[in-house]
Amino acid sequence: MKTIILISAMLVLGINTVFSQDTLLLLSGKSYSGQITEISKNYIRIYTDRSFINSSKLIYKDEVFSFVKNNETTVLYKPNFNNEIRFSELEMSYFIKGLQDGKKQYHAPFATIGGFAVGATGGVFGFWGTVIPSSYVFIVGIKTPKIENTFQSTENFNIVENTINDGYGLKNYSKQEKMILNNDFYFPYYKSGYETSAKDKKIKNAVKGSVIGFVVFVATSVLILHK
Image (cartoon, rainbow, N blue to C red; front, side, top):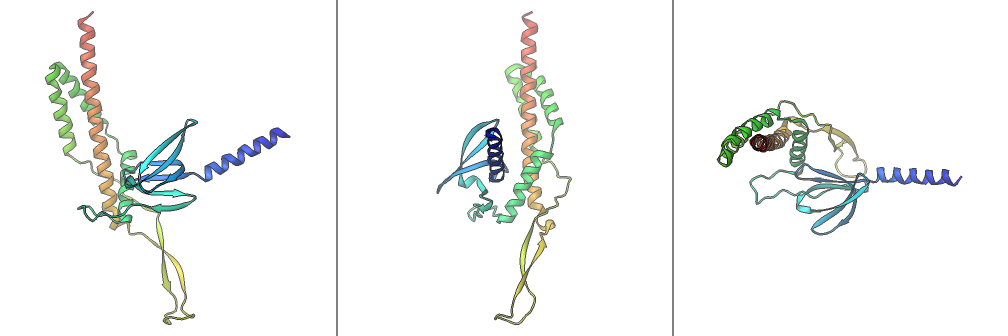
């Protein structure tokens, strides 16, 4: 009987933990899930569960777009009018969605392979050969990857529509209707985020491939010479 009660209690606690998880969305597109334990004037602290190890993260508010605590969403992002890029909250949300999709969906295997090849080639010339992979990374970073897919948002918002135009008074009531967001209008912001993330990934792959190629060639050469 005690065993059944213990198991039931553990299940209840587990269910409560799952449904009461808080989330934190950064302007970089990165997100954290866990328990928000502290919200101060300058930062938010969240505990994330990873492999049964609690990890405490302290995130400054100027890095945060929004957070969800107790199933309530709070948007911290405010347009910066001192900056040339003045995205509204909705425009920034599309930009962040683009960042996230670019990171997940875009792959740059040829940048990695090319980086490995030029890295190995640079290894032939030793230290001065680092110029070759560096130039390759620069060339790769010039061209921005193009987005091929289209973004379909399932988001919507409520608007108030007056059903009887009787002016002010008790007879004037309204109802809630849903209007789908104009994806064609907001797509450029999504596209900008996607291409920014894709370009960053492409450059990182080129750098990674170049370093691996250079190190592999040098290490192989050393092993052969010392045989």
